[in-house]
Image (cartoon, rainbow, N blue to C red; front, side, top):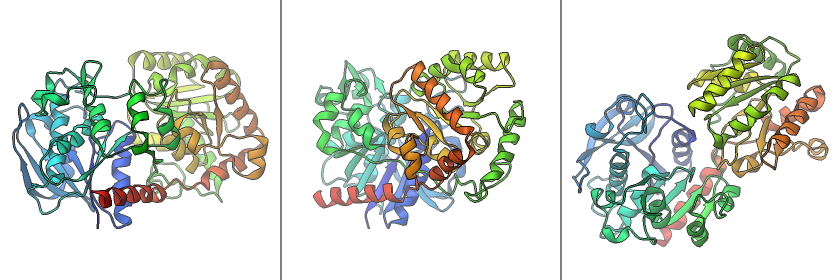
Length: 483
């Protein structure tokens, strides 16, 4: 049985800022279902420590350079086996994984996540002090990017390493002086190493030193080798293209299931889609919108940042309301964007509702109650919301990029006739193309039979983790056979 250590800075629902947390809670479980002994390693934030049961200390991480000592504690999140890194000085604090309660980045994030990577290297190294030793250390995003570097420079046999870049725009770039502070050799601060435009890059470390690199959709694996979407790393990624693969994320079909969802007003199946109207009316009342079954309601859940195309949404809001249509928004992000959305809602409260914050229940209600789900991202490595929405019979409207292009089949007369259409997509990222797509969706909504066909097509798609988990399991088998 292959033993895999899944290294992550987030784990849903205990520590979550985005899709990584959902992946960390779902993919290891799916891998275990395939016979892979996969265990999560996550920092011991207060919520994480409180939720871990059956705890026992299994290893110590010695101090290294400016990094403090830590304990590796084994336990369970429910039925899921896991390890956590306990270090009160770095993790025992209020706020989120990366920011304090006022939204300011923790000034010691480099040390906090270097320690996570150090602990991963301990569990994947030849001198690991536990009876459980990883065959593969699977690192996720820049926060775990130093683990492949620590293992690369370690003595003796070591685990194979996989580095998954969920979003290469977030790179973990720090001052070069921190290379010595986290205990890496000075020689690694080089263009053939961790140096990136004069900075020490955790992300580049993961990409450069890992045995295999993955990203979260096939289309995005090609996109990040281009200058437009490579965020400065396109040449390195292109050079390592034979070690790079795109594996589409899945979703937790037990959590995101309109048949059993405890958050929504009325549960439904593909055979009882009429009940969706109850969820729409409930959502409209909940958000103070006019209750109108005939007016299309567009939902949007996500980070309110330019990457998600929210600035483009703001540009088309007047035209969207005049279609006529309604918009329900849930998320947090840049203050300027949040303020602009709130101002638009105050000016037109019966058509636009904006909820700033993180609200898992409301997110489910929007998926179930909206008629369309809006996701016009500038770029999107994979995206999960467009898959959730299809499962709820809420056709997505997306920019055809990354995982959005891989998971949404645009509605055309041909795809609708052949039963493959699941949503709407626009290929050129600008106001006119988004607006034209919104109008096309609005027009289809008036044709009940066609709209229902689109809903049913999306609900029939299988976005569960089984296929993706099998791809990862095959990758692990290839790596361990070559080590």
